[in-house]
Image 1 (cartoon, one colour):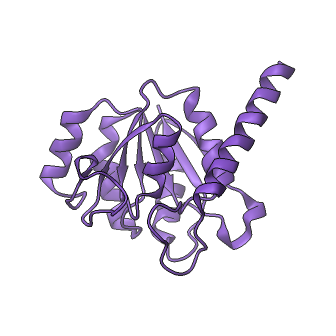
Image 2 (cartoon, one colour):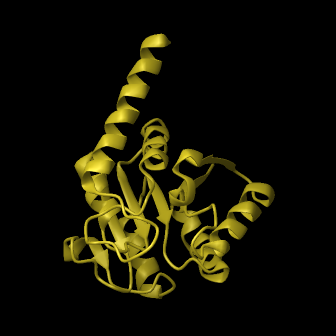
Length: 193
């Protein structure tokens, strides 16, 4: 048990170091391509949790943004596919469908490429849009991940939906929040069956 704990702590530190070396974006201003928008400690804790539960090392990312997470996940052996209306510059074109997540083409594309180890919802952060993504893509995976559940920096819709999901829906939830990151924390929430 002690050895397992030490191994997890070492792996967590490795993941955090890798995230920091890739570059983490401050909460304000536009990020350069390839940088992460996720808090390194929150991301490391999510990955450690996923490594014990996700049956596929493939994931669907709703809202690719600048492509930083996909680049990071590629580096640790996960294969991502994204849906985003704007093509990220740092991600191969065959890995992103340039559509809105609410389009029929996006859903059909996601269905044709399933199964997914997990689905990350990190697109439009308004409540109705986050709920629509949750409702539309939830049947495609037993693990749904939400970024920005703390509701900071204009992400109130994500926080509101996360509260609703964690109190009213079946399944289980877990969250990863690095309070030591202060205003740079975002919070990652996971709903799973």
